[in-house]
Image 1 (tube, rainbow, N blue to C red):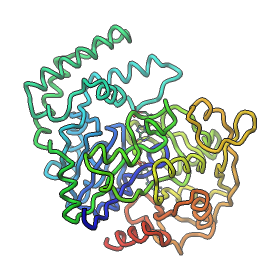
Image 2 (cartoon, protein in one colour):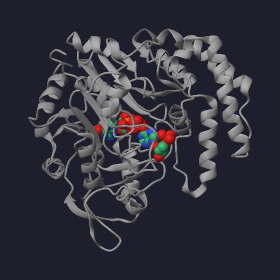
Image 3 (tube, rainbow, N blue to C red):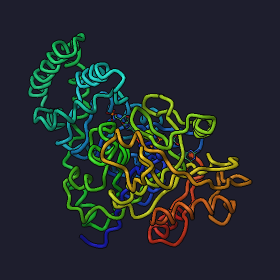
Image 4 (cartoon, rainbow, N blue to C red):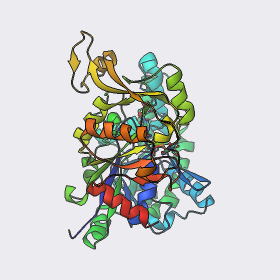
Length: 444
Ligand code: GDP
Ligand code: IMO
Ligand code: MG
């Protein structure tokens, strides 16, 4: 396998931690970036100077002109959404098609998956998951049910036309008989998929051999996870989760490489916490502090524009993420959003309904909804962290906050982000990950 220096970047909370920024920033040192899970439920905002890019399916390495990007077999891909994104990027001067490969085994997400997602959410009423409405759950369900269309069919028009229509007929039957909603107009839906297929067909290439070729040839590969550990289908706050695995191990399965190809895991977490959609969120703040975080952090979804629920950093949940995902080091983002606060709260333990100590995130989401967080108050800091690029320049209080989190979590904070732009970033400390990040930042 050679002296490979691959790395993984994953979300350590409920998504939107700033993975896009971190992947974009690190990509300059990686000839290849691979996205391995989810679909266009993901939304990453990448800021480069005054320019702003919104990425959903295309890996966040694409802004670097030298980087090759790959989409693994574990993705669910809406062909129209992918094309729209490619076209938007081209309008921004980023050529995508020459540098992007899509696994022939990725699943195709159809217009009827979207309709099913919305119909099911409608049926759940008050107990809805608050999905992005993109059809993600129904598409993953079809993979498990062994009836989904794989991306290779995009290059076989006759087969695609027939099998897309057949599957969408089944979906329509469900829409009408189970949910009592209007069926999707099939001719238009088939036409939509066929039109996109024609342009996407040239991108279909097996991903595993390419990754192996990169790594075996001495190149390092960056594996990019979407969503976050607390939204993982098995280890998140089930059922209020997404429908894919967001953990590092899934990258190997999705790309068709052994786990030895993956490299150390950089978990991205915000300096506070947010969540979109429903589900338990122990440290959610419903008062002015939560509103303040939303305003200062511009916490509105990249994909749906929904206001994000906001609250305090949750050490119990973060430790769960560190342990289950094997996070080696953290990238802590948006510390600048805490500038100016007199006091910060950090949840350090959970208390159950009877006052008992709950050591970790319970498997039962209803139980999680009933816990009371135990907080410690941490003094805020005078002065701003916004835009700072070195650890020494950080206000004393901010340094103490980082040290506090690091001690509680037992992993180093190797990167600190102080603003949305690439350059508003610092490597921190002397961990192996910090040294690597420092090397990458100094290459700029
Ligand atoms: P992702 O889904 O994990 O890539 O995260 P999103 O892009 O959905 O949400 C993160 C948001 O925070 C984006 O709008 C970023 O531009 C912004 N952001 C990232 N890092 C920082 C930071 O350190 N400070 C501030 N103020 N904004 C940041
Ligand atoms: P990135 O990659 C934040 C949430 C939805 C909902 C739940 C299920 O930008 O971090 P789904 O449409 O996946 O069936 O919705 O998961 N969700 C995200 N929240 N960031 C994301 O992606 C998300 N992708 C899905 O809000 O609660
Ligand atoms: Mg996001």
